[in-house]
Image 1: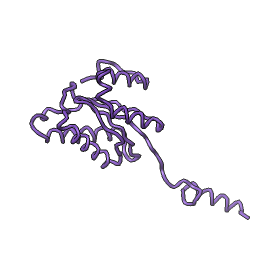
Image 2: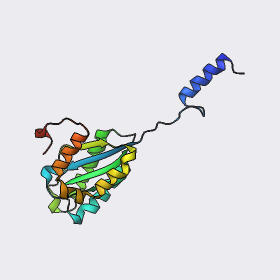
Image 3: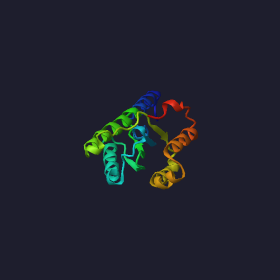
Length: 172
């Protein structure tokens, strides 16, 4: 029979995560839909470089323990569905992906010497039950952009997620 001392001691051990009944790990699974555009929506991401860029960006994400589920876009924008690592802050994820991929693009030839991502970005949380829907949306960007251009599409995301914005500062 457990004594009050044993019960107290067991509780302390459980809080520290040292017994089978405790919770010894930190668990987080944050699905995110990252959207950004080239600066001034310049059409730099042509078919000849597109898959290489997607592969490089997927590698960046893998290196920061934020695996890509789906990546796609058009010649002037990119959509990335990822699981954000619990070890990295959101702003650090964005900075790493944009900075490293921008540097890489500039190394791909003189035609990319003026490549930059726009200053801003969109990052939207995704319900785990909607992963397939978002992945399909990203896969079908060409069809999506026949219906709606990037700026209109981006505004729709801002409205859907009820994010207040000032049109003067959304684009560069």
